[in-house]
Image (cartoon, rainbow, N blue to C red; front, side):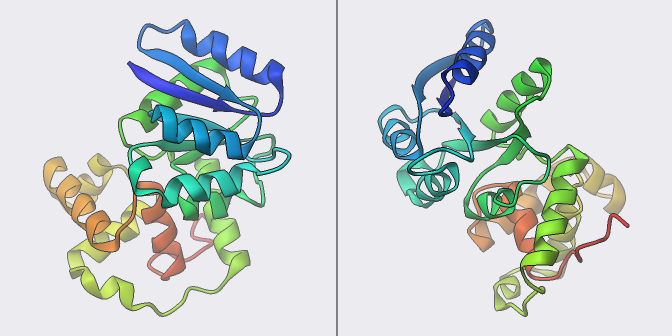
Length: 221
């Protein structure tokens, strides 16, 4: 059973999500909160698999709540999906950097929301939609130039190549096909890179790829 926490200051939005999620046999809502500080408290108490987090809430916002959850070792298995009203929200890139596993626009189709919850619950990043990759590229280019970093020194050349492909949005199967590897080998390389770099999931691996210049903003052309 996938356990979900809803964090949104609009009761009607929470009610809609709750009704949709609880109708599924493999998903249950374990809590609802209206601000970020409550989200962190309930996340610590309930240890949900997924938090659907509105990024704009009064008091402690979704970004700060995501930062606190991402920094808490006891919440390493809690995956945050940011909810936003707009495709390109100025805070989403920062949310990915501090630990979010992806983001959804609030008018996402119900079937896409359910798929997103299941994808994130199993530990994958919600990076498939092209708009996510465009967002990361956009805000990486706005926020700073890629910096020279020794953090990549811990990686082998093959692992750097793998991280760059993850940064371009490729799945393990696509990486395997590109590099003529087995999917299992590609997955092993991705996992080792994540461990060496100390990142929670593929979303943060994408951010590292942009920040260190392994992937250049604007590659979408």
